[in-house]
Image (cartoon, rainbow, N blue to C red; front, side, top):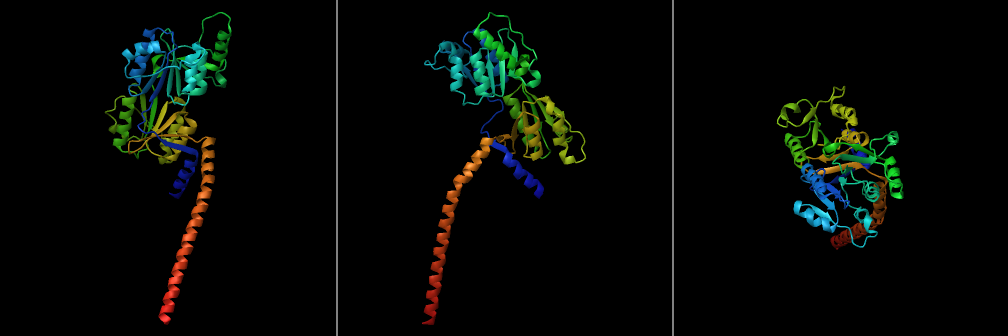
Amino acid sequence: MRIKKTIKRIGKCFIDLKQEEGRIIGESVLIVDNGYSWLGHLDSAIGKIVDYFPKADISVLTFAQRKSILEEEFPTLKFILPSEGLRPKRYQIGLQMLKIRQRKYDLILLFSLDITPLVATLFFLKPEKVILYSQWSQWWVLRFRNVTEIFKVTYFKKKTGVSLRNLLKRIGLFFILLQRKDEEVLSHSILVVDNGYASFAQLGGVIQRIKEALPQAKISLLALEQRKGQMENFSVLEIIKPDNCIVKKYRIARHMLRLRNNRYDYIILLSLDIIPIFISILFMNSKVLLYNQWHQWWSLELRNIFGYLKEILIFFLNIPVLIYLFITTSFILLRTRCRLGLINIKSIIAKKK
């Protein structure tokens, strides 16, 4: 028991646990209108986003003249307009994206491979997922290539004239990988990890919340065999039974390692067991969330160096406060002791008289 508590304390030093008030997974989407896409094409894409993310906070970055038209079709969406003072005008959308770079978006939807919005998206906004909706109504996912994908070709761009703009696009496509996924790119793959300690109400609650926020999501439940009978009503759920293990209490964690190549978008834990947490963060490359018994959402991630520097800074800032409190407390105790000593002396003198 002591070893388990010690491991948990060590784990807290490396993992950041942050409560997300009212958080619903996949909650923030930015749609970037390039200004020259056909409005029917734009309506189609926005409609799909609304269908796949009904509970999301969706913002549309567009121009004033197009905003009035889109507002009639989608009155519940938020609209962001580029500042009039941004110059040159043709780069207003990309420059406005730099101005809102402090906001956190889970998904950004682009309609072209224009260099300025693309650079702003990948280098400054850094969302969880970037999607391109092409003029041929195709859905593509964009991400940086890794070393093994440098010479992999998945997107054939039509030949264009020689210009600096086209040259920059070709250079950019060398480092960026585009993969056609069609509408499945909007669907999330989610793994819920149940170690057997969660109540059925907690487990049912998290699945219900996922379905409300992401109705098209593919949900898998990694759980022990006894859960199978309880989850019969959740027909869309895939239940994964962990393989046998010599130490039964580590069956779930061991099987998670086997699932690490499935590329889940989210891994949702129902308790703070340290081993599943470390496996999720270190090996599965997914967004890790905790849904606790009080139906609260928490995000878990490895602390970066700035987190450690912050803790060290807070510690050093607290040293003067601790010294002040120590001196003040010592003075109060000394004064109290002196007063008690004087009272005792006076009582002894009174007795002698």
